[in-house]
Length: 212
Image (tube, rainbow, N blue to C red):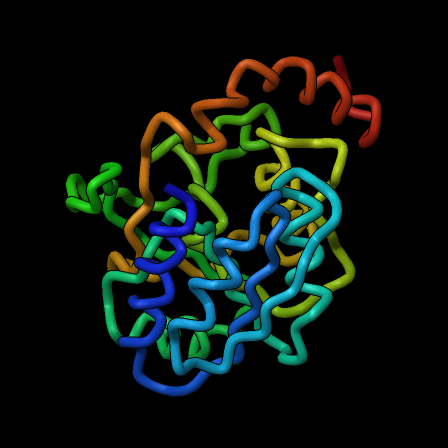
């Protein structure tokens, strides 16, 4: 399903008002995603990532960007508003990071409940579920910075990244308009790797010298 979801994401990017740099970092074992990228008349920079895992892939994508503002998108999510990137861009002129509201989306792409993004002080423990935290990286945008996504992490990688942004810049600016559809399906990372949360939090407590 990954290539089909990428096609849906790129289709939603093609409907955006304005022109933006697009970097697709691909760590899949096949070249289906590269074929999909060639279907679109968009300024897509396709790059391979030799390392498996979400963190290495998103770090690779960010490294390949040339702009000041970064808007990550998970392959299985989409933009649901044609001015989404414009809204993010305008807010990032004044704030270091931004988060938007979103819609829950199923595997077929049907939009469901609206999800409010919010800051959760327990986010480093993985309390980032829909409506209880910021949400997936698809709902955030940030200015390019010195942080990276810890490649030893999987399910808490985004949570730690948000935590680092919060410690440096405070809470994000919240856009109270749903701009993104977050897809929840059996193959999503949060479903597959959710049982690693305790193990990864123990690692983070040591890494950041947190109290037990």
